[in-house]
Structures are given as C-alpha cells and as structure tokens.
Length: 117
Length: 232
Image (cartoon, rainbow over the protein chains, first blue to last red):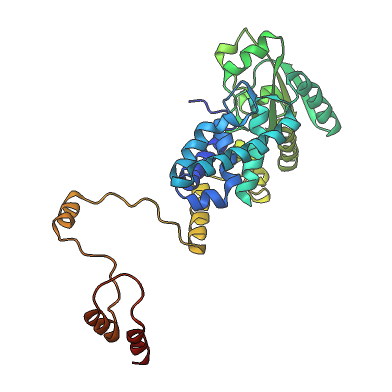
C-alpha cells in the first residue's frame, strides 16, 4: 500500500493509541493531549478536504473511553472537548475546511512535539 | 504552510538563485536516484492537478563523481549520486497526462548544500523529518541534530512503554473489572457453605448478664442494670 509522506506519523500514532491510550486509563488521563493528537492523526482521511469538527474522532474517542467503565462518558467527553480545542486552533490557522495534507502536516508537528515532551 | 503547486516552482527558482546554487530546469520526469522522502504521495493524487494544468515539480540534487557531463546526463549515466525529491511519486500512469519539470541542482559541498535544500523542502512543504529518508538525513547529520528526525516505530513503542511504567509506578492503576473465573473454580466455590461475612462483636460479660436477666423488650434498659454495667 502507498502510504504517502505521513505514513510513519500515522504508524507512530497507532503505536501510541494501542500501546498506551487504549491499554491504560491512567496513561489516557495523564497524556490526554498526546492521545487526542494521535487519534486526530489517525482519523484524518488522505487526499481530500477535511471539515475540522470533533466528529472526526468520535469513533476513536468511543473506543478509547470504552475501558473507563463507569467513567466512560466523562472520559469520552473530555477527549472530544480537547479534540474540539485542537481543531478550533487549526481552524484559525488553516480555515474551516483544509486540505488533508496541510492538516496532517500541522497535526504531525504537534503530535511529535507532544511525544517529545 | 502548503500554498499550492504553482507557487512552489517560482519560489524554488528564487531560493536556488539566492542560495548561489548551479542549477538547470528541464521539462521531463525525475532521473532515477536516492529518494529524499521515504514515501511520496501516490500518483493518483496528482491527476486532478495535472488536469488543471499545474506542472509536477521534481528536484534532483546532483553530486558528481568526477564526471564533467551536464547534470541531467551525469544522473542518467551513473556519473553522479542523485537525491530526488517530488511531492508525487512519478509513475507511468502519469505519462502524457502530466507536465513534469525537474530542477537539477549541483551540490558540490554535499553536506551543506544538501542540508539547505532539505531544510527548504521541509519548511515549504510542511513535512516532518520523519517523512524523510533516513539515509539522506544521516548524510547531512540531521539524525543527531534534530530530535525525532530518525525516530522509528520501535523507539516510539519503547517510549510509550516507559511512560506507562513511569505512571504505573507513581500511582497504582485502579482495578478494572476482574477477569471471569474458570468454571471449575466457580462451581467449587458455589458448593461450599456460605459464611457470614460480617460478624457482630462479642458482647461484654456485663451485657451478656443483662440480656439473660432482663426480658426481651424494646426501649432503653432499666436504670439500675445500666448503672451496674457502668460500674463493673
């Protein structure tokens, strides 16, 4: 399969989600920003215009929150709220609808910064 | 930020002229060589742009190996090492439909010239260092200079594992739902008589005596007996 220049970043996002965010609730709560950015990197479709709305990560937020048991809704809402904040920032920078490549470039930058932190 | 395909060609000409590079611009697809990106966009992504008439811009950074042939010839005949960059992977399906343009750039002082070119590409195309070919990054020494430039999947996995362990050591993880018991254990437990979990504390000697002496009734115990208990 042809991955494009962001293939590696998507792989890293997958590693973070599977190895950390989905595996441990403690990790998810402590590194919420990293998990949200990883979910966004994974959720952006390639090669189209993307509407910057938290609905992008709805399915992934549900998946991540599934492990939280009774706290499920609270965790999912926290994830969607943070995703909304990140996307609002990107909307200011890139406009309401952005090419997926431009969006991925910015998300990759933020994700790798957060991974480094 | 990504500014569209037309602006890139013009800006590249300006960058090369200002940087003092020796370069030529030739119509045609890129030569074979070392890919600067690990993976470029698939050719199908370019079809729309080609239909709109935009050229596909490629860069070939050429390091001659003693050859004095023109840059494009040196690349094709193997008289040079060519580092090739393009947003879109060139493929036979684009032949005849797209208008490719290749910039052949002479990089004599390989490290410095190539580093400047890579920086320019990363900045104008908003590409993270992890999108670049590790071998090319090693040539210019960016693996050591830039954090995360040569990050691998294994390194990320190790990092995540370390973070998880660190967090777990700080505070124990709250217990999740207990795993289901095996059937044999569950049956054996069900067969055993149930034991009372909470027990009342054993009454004191005084209370026991009081209970025996007084008839069972509601309300406070008679005064005299209460006093008796207190005094004993």
